[in-house]
Length: 285
Image (cartoon, rainbow, N blue to C red; front, side, top):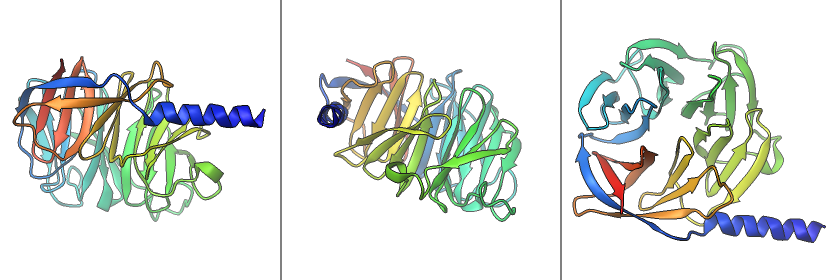
């Protein structure tokens, strides 16, 4: 029985790290200009939000590339940032991971400040996070924060009240070592990039899958049932409706496309790719 289990695990890993039927995408357009883009997110309305690490600003664009709004600048006050390393957007809110200010700022869709979550030095060690690297919400509005200071994930309810944390030293094989990004699926599974591993937890923090990758991944994004992983050079895709299928490598064609890749999102059958200085939009060949 143990042998069958081991073989099943090996087959599962082979499915994960291999790819078949590569998908080709052709460049449609590019837009925007950033100095050093950090992260981006697309909400269900099709509004694109981008953080710029050089200017410490967050920008909003429509899917045609028109700039709608922006906010930020270096600082410690509300609507100012010091290293906005991640941005996550819902139909109502935009969550900015303000790393060096040890907080998550919540903005509305027009980038107006709503609230901030700061727990460092507040007296509750279980809820405390510092130098956060990523944050996202579940379909229930629960906020998950990647705490790089204590190497764990912290979960808060819709009222920013502490619920639990997971992935720390007592999690055995699911102990986080060097986590960099998190993403949450439609059914509220939490995916975490941890070095060359992709860990999957359920919404309660129970680990239920570990996938070893044979390539360096720098970012993960989920939009609908589309999960994308990317390194600086390549993008891989997985349909979460069929999570045991092969990863598919996406090949990008377009003379003006410049790497390295910061992040990639599939939205409305188009592939949006963020590089350091712009957003490129591709359509499937």
